[in-house]
Length: 503
Image 1 (cartoon, rainbow, N blue to C red):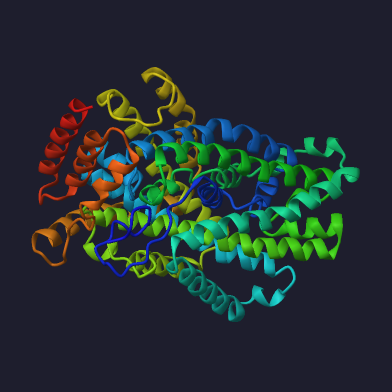
Image 2: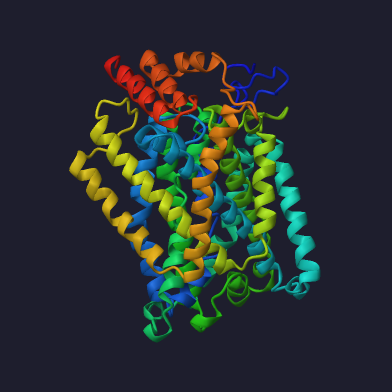
């Protein structure tokens, strides 16, 4: 068993190394990489928007309509349920284990699709200097090599991912700070107002905006690895919102204001060319190096969240216990391998295809999260909430309304192919749940909670309302232990009622 404060404290294997839990600064960096990683990939918003104006307005308005509401919902629910699994536990508490499983499957699948983007985006930047990566003969081995190398780093430990993310964020943003300073004498503000509505691709525009500003909830799957989540999460989310928006707006203002490039030239990797035109070849190479480092951070952060989500689902009996097994570094080995395999199979898709598919699945999951947030506010008003959004029931409904409408809009703009592929994925999730339940009933695989009683000691050390929190954890855990999910729902309701009465 790990020592108090180590991320491996929930593991039965006494040989697992104990690692320090995540604090505010590493968590800000991880959230930054879950959501953004820098301005790499925002170039499409200029071409899809028919010029700089819609792109700049989008990154000013969309955070108000989407990012801030999602961050606030995440802060409240992640601190109310501070355990691995994140939104899977929230949905299960609100709607039962069936929908919790669907949420977990949709979000994991969209997360794997998102992670498949980063090796692709990395090579898109490199091909500007190394055209060899335009051909499949070089591109496929490069994609496989990147995936295997980054997966190994993730296997080596979450603490490595967290603290290296801080360094990677600084390194990735530095060339854009330099580029922005060098662009000041060349900026012509009138160029920010350019827009050609005949060239606007609304589907591509909204998908680009949405993809670059979502995934604020992903870090919740690491809640069990965060030190004092009730204080750490709200601070980290606030810092990450400021960092993400600034990392988009400032480089776009510099690049579009200093150059007269046609909107059609703004495609994946174009910031490297912008750097060369503003500062010279040295800045182009620096931006390409920053892109490489940024994609490393993006891949590592996403894979950590996806893997620990599977671990959390296993810990509460939703997946076989093998998914909760940890390596000697405290990382969920099987869960990491499962996510890496999905990345390899999806890396052949184009950037725009991946973005549209993952946005659709992510939208469905987020609608369920907003519904769970409102339902828990109405049904469980006395639920222990270390951080609470300072709004009453009507206020939280109004808070969730604009982002929900945006989600529906993104889904409506999807192509027929996206509807079909997403429909198949959803159907697969519906079939997987009874299959997993049947496997548990027939004892085809070992199911159970990997966490020993030490987790209660952790709660004693970190929370004042201990009895309430322990009972609440038991309520969320017990959702998946019975062979009949309807019975599990009834039992979880009773346990959660007891938790509220003990508050």
